[in-house]
Length: 163
Image (cartoon, rainbow, N blue to C red; front, side, top):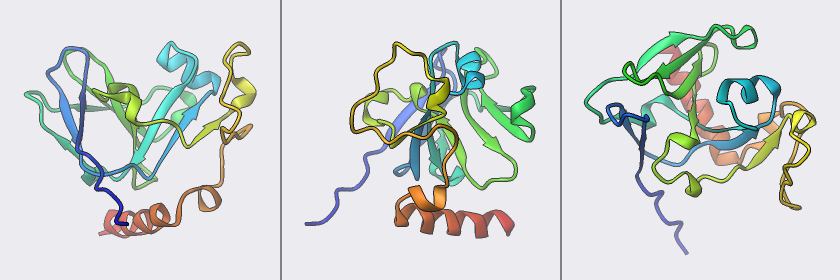
């Protein structure tokens, strides 16, 4: 059987002025339970869909703006935000050829469950993860964890980023 094409997903900010279309499946999705992500989101974890920049297409009235992160643990990171309501849509580490899309900004975030939970040592104690969830106490080795198809796409994105 042939794999079904990934549906075109859309998302945006709180005020609705900055919108985007996700043109393709993410490379990988992880839920980060580190304290820094908890503080930044005001929630118990952040959910990131890692994807190539050319697969996120701006479709809103207002283009997102990039702001350099002030977070000590995120040096070199640029946060893409709506200039009107200041909601972060994705972030980009300038040393890496991908974006970390904030899954909660998708119109239907339920379509993007995590492939892995990371920094579970900092996870709030009352949050029960599924029994079959893949977990790491810290970060993970993407070369060992990501699907081969995602590693191939990452290789292509890395070459493009150097052009």
